Length: 175
Image 1 (cartoon, one colour):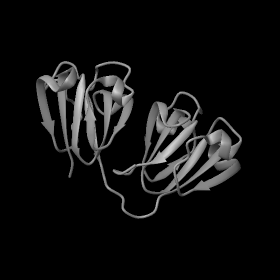
Image 2 (cartoon, helix red, strand yellow):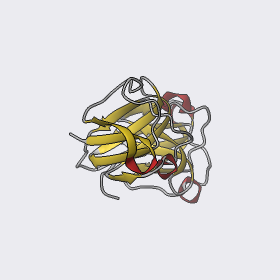
Image 3 (tube, one colour):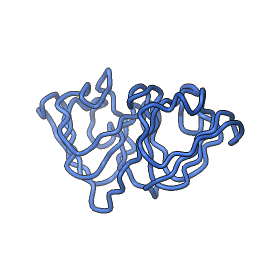
C-alpha cells in the first residue's frame, strides 16, 4: 500500500490531501495541484477524472512543482496506486499492428527505442510480466502511458493517438 500527498501550491504549501488508495475523482479535495510528495509506493496521476488524460508516473520522492513530474499543467484529477512487482518484467514490442512485423523482447528498460529496434514507432505490444511505462521521447521524457500485463493490438489500446514510443521502462520503486 502506498501513500501520496497532493498540495495546491508549489513547494508543499496550501491545502493538501493525503491518499492511500485509488481515487477516480479528486476534484472535491483540491482545485489544483502544484506539488506532490510520494511517501511510499509508485503511483500514476492523471489530469482528468476516471484515470484519463495525460498520465504521469511518480515513485517515492518530492515533486515541488508540476514540472518535476513533467506535467503540462496543475490539473490532477485522479490517481492510481501501482502494485509492486518483485519478479521479472517482460515485454514484446512489434513494428506493426496485430503483433506483425519485426519484434523484440525486453526484460530491461529501454532509453532509446530507435537504438535498439531501428524504428521510431511501436504499433503493438504484449506485456507478459510486470507493468511498463511508454514515453513519447527518448530517455523517459514526454507523454507517458501505463501498460499492465496484457495484449495491445494497436497504439490506441494504450491510449495514444500515435505510435510514437521513443523509450520505455519497467515500473519499479527503485531506479
